[in-house]
Length: 143
Length: 143
DNA sequence: CTTTGAATTGAGAATGCTTGTCATTCCGTA
DNA sequence: TACGGAATGACAAGCATTCTCAATTCAAAG
Ligand SMILES: [Mn+2]
Ligand SMILES: [Mn+2]
Ligand SMILES: [Zn+2]
Ligand SMILES: [Zn+2]
Picture: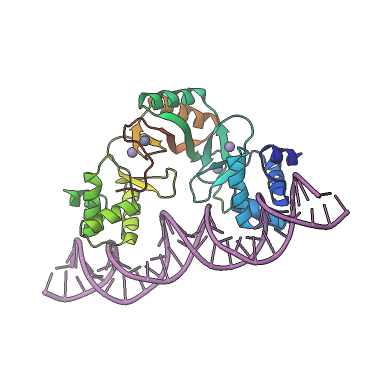
């Protein structure tokens, strides 16, 4: 039950938070904008405000439930935190996002930070290219 | 002379463009926000508008003279394109930016894109950490 | 099952960065 | 030197996100 996830994250169990968690779990593997989450909940007949969606996403992020990414194109995207760290490759035509993890790259990053005298906290690695999906073509927005 | 750089980039030689190129060359190695560039030119007594700074930076970028980066914190930063590609490590306390290049990482990126069926166009890799500079402390803005 | 105070919510205003508009000015060629 | 299109500056507008605040909801206690 998602209620438990919320409680153990130190968050009060409320309608908006439950609905958002559900949605994020049902679209796992996807990377959604706040706007897309808002729109889907509204279309599903829920009563929620965009400000709440942003607020709750920030809380989820602070609680480690969700990760925020800044790919190209203004809007941040969010994904449910499941499993271990990974990086992304994004199709510049259709917007498709694939995930990958490469231990060699991670290791080099740690070595580089150390050599430059930085205590490494975090990193973002995103590749941009054209995918080879049959239906790949320029996209308008998220559903 | 910078006039030549502009002409060979297919850009008309104008005051604002010359001043901006000069500034970028004199602060080479730095990563400046549009606002910072604007402020420095105004302080130097130049007459220029912020909109022009943004416009010209976009033109410089299209011409390959300048690279735009989106580190954390809203504002994009720009740097004169000199020499080969590199990635960045940013201090989350003082904002200092160091550059690095790692052929092993670049190679792995190409391999990953190929394996996932993407024609790789581009990538962004930014490490975030705490630097070990003596005077490192939380920063307010750029000069 | 009520009470109750603090946390949460939704609507709309506000913010910060960036881009668009448009009348005026400037550049470069004829 | 004159001309027409490109570039400029001031300001308004756009966009994603955050803030404000009165109304609502949660959960702990009684
Ligand atoms: Mn992901
Ligand atoms: Mn750089
Ligand atoms: Zn695609
Ligand atoms: Zn530092």
